[in-house]
Length: 65
Image 1: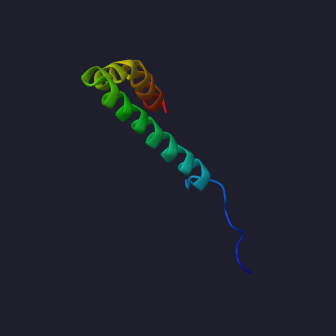
Image 2: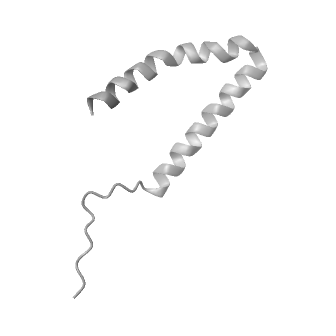
């Protein structure tokens, strides 16, 4: 007899979730590039400044486990 597959503790992400994550990152970068093309240097650094609290909160969430 073959052993039953163990699905507990699987760390493999779902392909659909990974696809949505990659799509979201690509869209975000495309919008940021459009912002730079339209507004120049302020279009580069203002979104980066707006993301500082988001990244700070994300670092806290990651460090807490």
